[in-house]
Image (cartoon, helix red, strand yellow):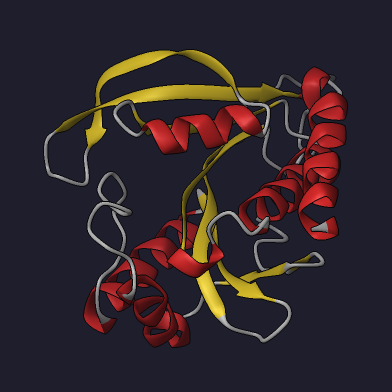
Length: 212
């Protein structure tokens, strides 16, 4: 990708390119979480796991299928989690088509999103999603953004629905779960024609958080 290292800045959080030097910070961010909080998500525990987690993400970035970030809290510069674009696709548009020859993705997924316990319900997730969706739809001009979560993860499913994701169905035995079983995934998406409405709703939700 020609723009696979960029920063997305908001009022609460800043998404910066994930780097090996973030390993200790990610380990610290996840250390305070109890087992129930991260039950359904593959969160790195400890510096060694965090280093491997980052190496995998950067490998996907080299392949052009992911753009990973560390999530930094603006007020104090603390790393409070991670997220990424992934499953990035560029479709084989025929010559003469307006989208032929584009370097930017046509569709992508947002996933591997997690936060330290203290960042939950602070507006950080709302703003992170607003920043990423804005870049995806308005800079890359993607046609669709997908989001998946473990079908058992009711908290994550509710969060996706709150940001405007439309439920598409359950993908059976879709991926390996955090508990190393075949995971059924709840699939959600936002398409380009829905983005204006979703953006307005996200901005309003964020304003409510900031006004508290």
